[in-house]
Image (cartoon, rainbow, N blue to C red; front, side):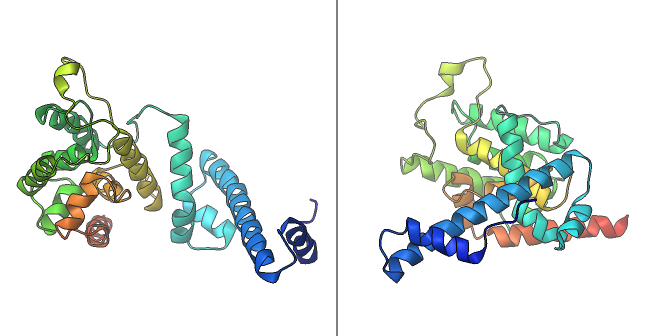
Length: 254
């Protein structure tokens, strides 16, 4: 294998790329070069992590090969892997979803129709989590004293404020225009599904459950679901702690 550039070679590259011979300008050029190198090395490792996963290798094996903890591997590579999987399947597919999670996804479409919206947004997904009261997400929400009535009231308040909700289509557009059809997922809702996949990978799970859907809603702070949760005091760190405790309880009973 060809050796990577030496430090002196990198210094010379930075000097050539710098806008002047002033140390501060060269520092700016060095920072840009370092960022490009970091992005390239992450992409290189991510490529082979992805190949290992496709080859059936476990996260434990991958972390041992890299000499880091499994948690560190999850944190570093799970979002990129989730984005790669999502890019390969542009339309939402639900093979990895548990029965409860699939029911929540279906119920989010029903929630959109009931509210008269022509798209499934993150707030509909949040409402739908309550349709599975035994799911970990609904149980976590109950522990944080967030009720279905609270969420509905927050959505109504957002409507009364005339909020755009961060969606590309105005909320005034109604489902009457799509009579008899299932509302499509908004861009933010698709992102939440992708983030749920990333969170499942971070946990080392080969499935997506309601708990992953809930935590996925927090990843985009601009979406209405995240705003509702945060404004109600149900912070992501608290939700994750509750989910982790429940999952640990399941593991101890096995």
